[in-house]
Every structure is written in structure tokens, then in C-alpha cells.
Amino acid sequence: MATARSPTLFHFSFAVNDLDRARTFYGEVLGCPEGRKLPGRADFDFFGHHIVAHLAPTEVVGADGRKLGTGGKTPLRHFGVVMTLEDFKQTADRLRARGADFLNAPEVTQKGTVREQMLMTVNDGCGNAVEFKGLGRITDVYAVEEANRSA
Image (cartoon, rainbow, N blue to C red; front, side, top):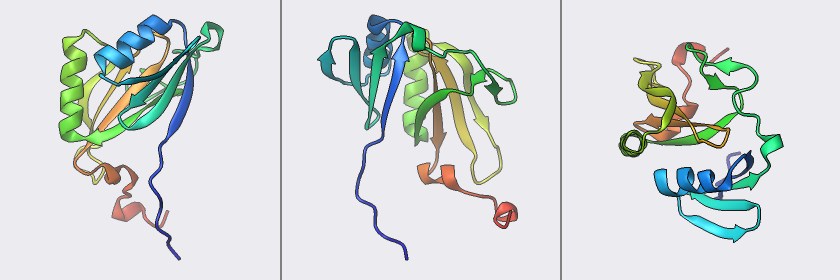
């Protein structure tokens, strides 16, 4: 029996190697409002979700470890947001205008499938990879091709 879900916020806490750069990237470049200002951390409204950057340089994973994708540029350990195509385009324009360090420039992936999407990954300047996915309907991120439903 399916039940209705109540609205929730996703929370993510992560390490950065420089809080001032985190405030610049998340606050100024992405336009995410900053919340509480406590020593050693910065809270942001990350596209409607709560993220907290903690100053912990020795805990930053960065680009170490396995890479994903056909180009092998996206670190396995990354986070991001799924957004509408319009929001994706606005975010991509904003990132380009601010000279973002793209690990993967904006491109169409999974073309011709139910999960066709715009995708880009950027370095936040603090040791983290941040991925953005743009879809016509954001719930299509869960879609499964008809041929793969029974697998």
C-alpha cells in the first residue's frame, strides 16, 4: 500500500579546505543563501536542500579514488542536484559567467531515452565535485526504460 510522503529536506554535510572559497562558490557563484554562521562551518540553502560545509582540510576526498562516466572525470564521491532544464540552463550560464572549473562541461547524456538529461560537473574550489542534472521532468531521474523493467 502506497502512502503519501510529507515534504522533507535533504541534508548533506561535507568537508572543505577553505570556508571563504566555499562561501564564494555556493553563496556568490551558485546564489545559494547562507544560513547559520558558526565557527568552522557554513550552512547553505542548496536549491531547497540543507548543506553544511565544514572546514576540515584533511577530510576532503577531492578527486582521489575511482572516476565515473565515459570521460572518467567525475569522482565517485560527488553530490549535486536534479533540476528542471530551465534551471539547469540558468545555472550553467551562471557558472560559465563566473569562470567555473568544469570537470564535465554541460552536455546531453542518455540521448533518446526516457532519462535524457543535461549534465555538468564542476569543481567547487574546495576539493569537491558538484554535479547538476537537468531534466524535462525531474522525476524522470528514476525512470526505467521499458525493456529494463523486469531486470
